[in-house]
Each structure stands twice: as C-alpha cells, then as structure tokens.
Image: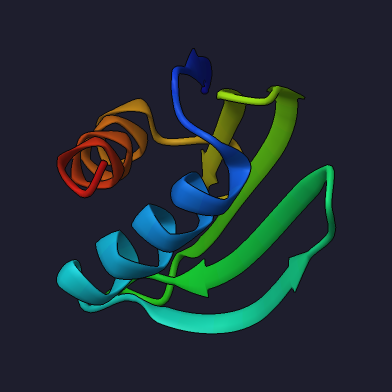
Length: 87
C-alpha cells in the first residue's frame, strides 16, 4: 500500500515511530536519510512489517506499508490510520 500525505519526512518519521509503539509492534531495524526512511518491525503475531517513507517535496511524503510476504491490506490500513492519528 502506498499513499502520499501532506507531512514532512521528519514528522512522518516521528509519527511512524509513535504509531508502532501504540500498536505494540517490535521495531527490528530503522534507517533514515535526508530523502527517505525505512522501518522494519514485527507485529504481535511476528508478521514482518516494512514501512518506507520517501520525501516527495518539503511537506509531501510517500508512505509505503507492507505487512507479511504477500501484503495484508487490512493491517496496512490499520498502521496507516495510526500513523495519521499521530500527525
């Protein structure tokens, strides 16, 4: 799942970290640069989660979420909504 949101990369990064904590997901790896960021985490059921943030403009960030190997749209929307709650 991918979406572009009106938020800076730094603010999206903070919102993502807080959303994962809210959902009680375990963060396995984090990387951030000036243009992008990536978080790998595990759900409570140990399913892999990958969240990718890409700066599109100063206040536009693409948020990509993948849950599991083949994707899980319901859980991806849950994560995205929790990230948006933290904007």
